[in-house]
Image 1 (tube, rainbow, N blue to C red):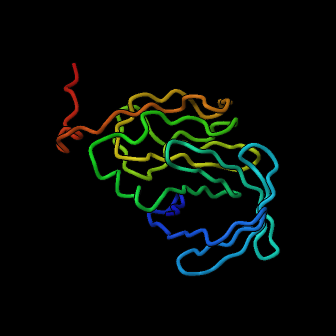
Image 2: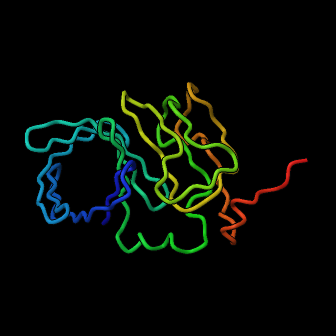
Length: 177
């Protein structure tokens, strides 16, 4: 399984070694970690690592699991799926709210070309900021929210379309009338 922090470009190797009840053992980039997870609500809970407790929220979106821990957001996906974004397809045509919350920042505008992993919108939920990112190269077709807006779970935030086939098309755009 691969792990990617939303604000970082790099990826980490994460291997789940054992899971028994609430106890979890994992190897992150060769370093073994033990943790306890207590589920609090659908997609949320408390994670305890080395005596430190973290409140987390999570949501599944397509083949990705988004996890918010404090101000950081992580995306988990299977290692063999990491290369699938090299094709011309669009991984996700819509960016939706993984949980109810408040839109803090919209980081893109309609017509913007975005790259895989680029932050598009930042939500605040349960006193945590969550950056939602593009799962593949795309063009922002529509921004459906504004900063300060409250959204429900599953609400449409941003609609994406596939990137142009010719990279020079991204720069030329359509002539002004």
